[in-house]
Length: 79
Image (cartoon, rainbow, N blue to C red; front, side, top):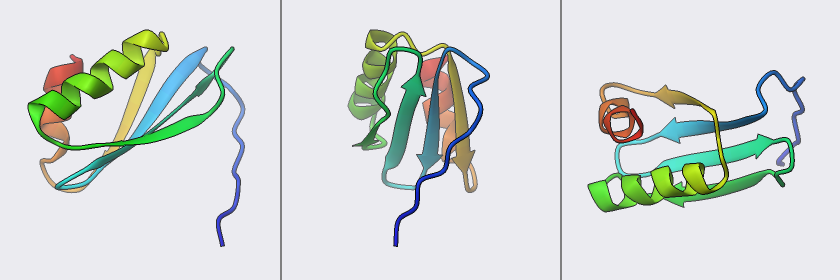
């Protein structure tokens, strides 16, 4: 059963990314945004699509949860 969790808003627009070996799950939320979740692959083209999506939505902060070193390519594309 899926449940909703709400948090006090600290940043105007943010993204949380769950980083897996073969995919990412990213959720954006914030002022003027509907909360939206998308999945992306881990190849450069997919990571660029993630970056473009974040820029289009004027996301200012990103947090990642990752096992191992899978966060590194994501970091380098978003840096």
